[in-house]
Image (cartoon, rainbow, N blue to C red; front, side, top):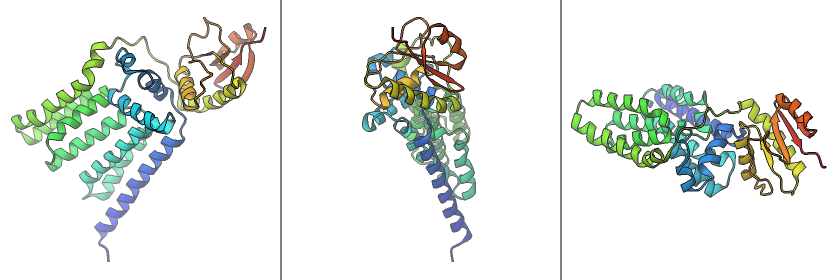
Length: 312
């Protein structure tokens, strides 16, 4: 008969596989969020020279490079832009299992934590950065592949600049445990700094300050936006159209345009109040503004209104 520890290990592995399956399902079925669409529209779709001049604060550098490759291989879709995060989700679960395999159910608990924020089912660098930190911890605890610890930590910063402080704390913890300054410098500090700078030095040298706070749609609003875009697609047909949209929805409209190859749509613009467009995707609170201009209503829900310009 199998020992209790063997049964517990197999059960834990099955639970970790189920966690990954849930993340894959979410990545494939959830509508694209405005933050994910913004990352694609500003840092994945443009050319490299255009990207270099973009705002660093809104960019996950390593993730945008991985996403560009994924989209190039599998075309634009919510799943393809989230695929790099899913792949690193596998590395995260692998590292958690190696760290906690003697306590199998503890591995399940730690592995399930990212489910709370859907970290590996969204297109940003947070899940990638977390996975790389977990791998670095695994190598440090096992005292294996020590040269890779600093590389993983540097890549973590490149994936999400917000991880700079956690990475610094983790590096100091490794120093406190090993207590060998020369080894720590050669295998952690120097590789971490070099790798991070390789990915960040060009964006840092070209970056400029972000223009104000960027508005984002909530998860429910992202869901509500999809029927409005379907209505726009049906109404526009094959005609060339210009689209004005509220700033929070603009990246999502442009992502939808790329996903469905709606080449007759010109890229959406957020200054819809100051220019003339063929279609206007606006907030429900702006209904009065649209009525004053005698626009024709195409779609309405609790969050969004879609109007088209009246034919003269």
